[in-house]
Length: 205
Image (cartoon, one colour):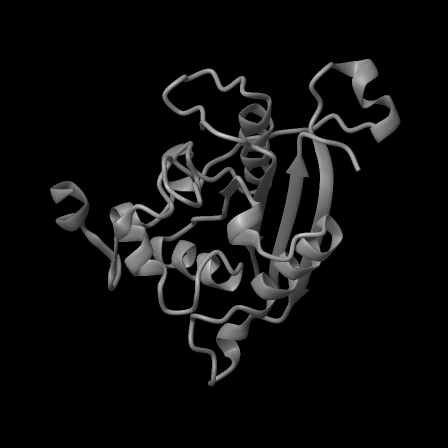
């Protein structure tokens, strides 16, 4: 904690450990039809919903408050609608979100309706988003742990959901307990601003 608090300031108030490191990398996913999935493996993970939104960078709008990101809201709502999710904080088992910066992660929590507006910082301190909390988020450490190979990050984060829902995470301490049904992965960037949200589950339909 002291290392993080005393780290060099990158862009006030963000310090070194508030910012993910960018790097190079590649990733891919093998996708097939639902009716063929179990011919490939006995425990497939199914795509339940997807939403994407893009547009101009809101930063150029004098009224932009750095709290409300239209692309985040639109992409998550589209994915929820396709997946039949009406209450993400109750229906999602875990999430992997694009925590490029500490403050971005908090904004994502609220724009994705993981919590009420203005409460993310308090719930974070209370452990709400911890591995054993009500809404586990970035249980593998997120971008600030892995680094951010830009185009590869979204699939890497989805892979964590894949292993969690199969209960096959290589580190037993990271494997979540309880009834795991739905997971959300998210990637975010720009310009232009683009947000993509994927919801996957361990049951078809």
